[in-house]
Length: 336
Length: 213
Image 1 (spheres, each protein chain N blue to C red):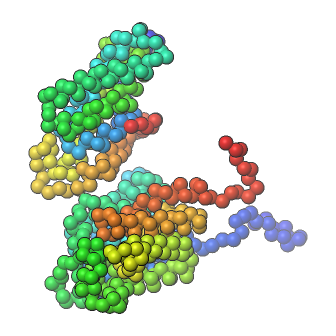
Image 2 (cartoon, rainbow over the protein chains, first blue to last red):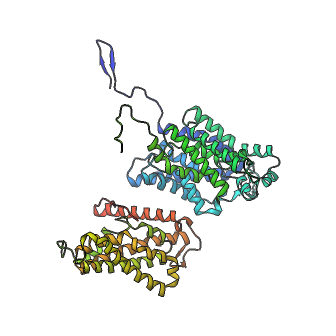
C-alpha cells in the first residue's frame, strides 16, 4: 500500500512498518527441531520402542487434527506443525512400554478434545500434550507407570522394570537412591545424562537443555517461566524435602529428575496456555514450581510437573487480565 | 396469565420436555447430578425416576394451587411444595430400596435444589392448568431421565465395562469415564452431539442459555 509522490520522493505507508519473517509454522517446526537431541537420547536409551511410541503418538495427533478440521469444515492446518509438535511431546512423555492404543487414544484426546473442540490452535485453555498424558495416566495407571531400565543398546532386549528416581525417593528415601546409583556424584551425573527410568524424552536433562538453549538463542522462549519454575522447586524441595528436618532436602536430585526440565522449558512455555505478560509469567512459574513441589513431597503421585502446569493453565486468563498493561492515553475506569 | 392454555397438545408438551427443552442437553441446568450419579446406569435411572416423579407432582401441585399463591412469596411456596414431594421420594426409597439409597440418597435429597424443578414450576406450572402442568412436568422429568440414562450408559460401559451391573466387557477400557472428569467429558461430547443433530436436521442454533447447577 505504498503511495509514492514522484515529485518529492516521499514514500507513505501504513503501519505495521516493521515486519518479521516469523510465522506459527516456522516457530513450531523450530521447536520440533530443538527436541531432536532429547528424542535421539530417548532412542539411545530405550531403543526401537521409543521410535514406535513417538511415531504412533505423532500419527494419532496428525490424524485427529485432520479428522476434526475436515468434519468441522475448517481449513486443514497440518503443515503448521502444531499437531506434530503436540504428538512429539506427548510421545516423549510416555514410558517406553505402553501398548499401542495408549499413544493413539491420548493423541486423540490431546488434539481433538483439548485443542480442536475449544476452537483450534490458540483457543485451547490447557496444554494439549499434557491433557493427553493426564488422560492416559488416569485411565491406564498401571501401564503409564511401568518403567523400564534404560538399556543404552539395541541388543539388550531383556529389559527390567524398575521405579523412577522420584518414585524411589518417595517410597524409600534418599539412602535407597544412593544404594541404586552409587555415590552422590554418580547419581547427579546419571540423572544429567539421563541414564535412568522415566518417560522417553524426559530423562536426558543435558539433551533437553541443549534444545532449550537453542530456543532461548532464537528468542522463541524467555527465561521468565523456566527460571522461576525451577527456582521455586529448588527452594521448596531444599527447605521441605528432607526427612531429617528443614533445609535437608536435595534440590539437585529434584531438579534433575522427573519431567521437570521438559515441563519447565517446553510445556509451561507453550504460547497459548501461559500468560503473555512478563510479570504474569513469573507468577505462573512460581505457581507451577510450588504445586510441583507440593505434589512431589506431599501428594500421592511421585511426580507433579504435569498436574502443576495444567492447574496453572487454569489461572492464565486470570493472571493476564489482572496484569495487562494499560493502553497509553486510555482513560482510567471510574472508581467503583 | 392463562393465555398459553390449549395452544399446544399434551404430546407436544412431553416432546418439548424431552427434546426441545431437555434439562441437561438443551437448557444446561442440573449438571451436578448428571455427573455425580451417572457412573452406573442403575443409579442414573433411579435418580431419573425420582426426578420424573417429583417434577410431575410438583408441577401438578403448583398448578392446582396457582390461584392461592401470592406472586410475591411464590418462590418459598414452590420450595415448600418441592421439599414436600422430595421427602416423599426420600422416605419411600429409604424404606424400599436400601442398597440404592445408600449410594444416591444424598442426591435424592438434593433434588430440592435442582434448578430444573423450580424452573418448570416457575415458568410453566404457575401459569397453566393442572393437566397441562402435569404433562409438562412429565415431559421435563422424562427428558432428564433419558439424558441421565444416555450419559450413564456410555460412562458405565466405557469406565467399568458393564451395564446395569452386568459385566459386558472383561476389561475396563477407559477408567477415567467413571471419574468426575470423565463425566464432564461425556456430558460435553453428548451435548455437542445433540447440538449437531439440532443444527444439522432441525435448523436450530444449538444449546445456549443460562447455566446452573
